[in-house]
Length: 298
Image 1: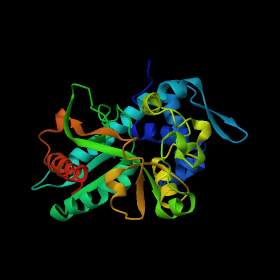
Image 2 (image 1 turned 180 degrees about the horizontal axis):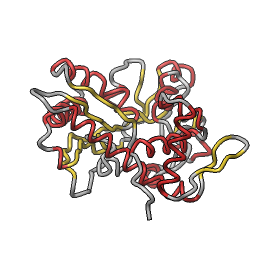
Image 3 (image 1 turned 180 degrees about the vertical axis):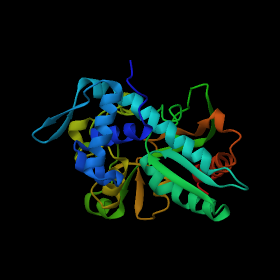
């Protein structure tokens, strides 16, 4: 039984200490003094009747209870942030904050001009962008709107398909000039190939169809799509890139066009409870329209 109702701010402090491993680092991240952070943790432990951290030689070590409470504290923090976004939107016109979630490449390479145009049209609209492709962040209210490379299946979401983004093999012209152009997927073993580090579901499905990309044959490995894109642009070798994105740079050349082509369904989704929110409605519409134009190569 709880000894008292904990302050929501204590949960926020708890999460920062979990992430940083020390009171001082958590205080710097939150703009609080170390003693204040310590009081928050002491107060939360007293309210819950639990020991959440033990001092270790290199900082604060979370207990089993802290690990078990983490997802619930994360949910509380997400709900509090969502409440602040809703509160900020009240007033005349389109205003307030919209929190977006998108994959690395979409968030960095595609969305910025769309969001800049949206901001010009609605100067009181603020954007928070999270680079993530997790399935559940909309349901947990960790984001208001998400751009996803798969069809969201949850019934509580409103989703719109904007088209299919094609992936192809590309290399910088300087690399091809020095190393030649592969004539088949099998011939890629003689080239520097850029690819994944750890397998995920998408990679496993890809390898079932295209068996020419075993991890051990990859000359550059990273799970960051941005890092892979950077390596392609730098002339490191041949890698997978969104065709619409590569078309923006004439120095990036597509290879094996007829032998490698993968299409990713692209969707914009938001929680159905946000249908009546002006800030979310205009952002959803702008993303759907802009991403459809991107997919079409416009």
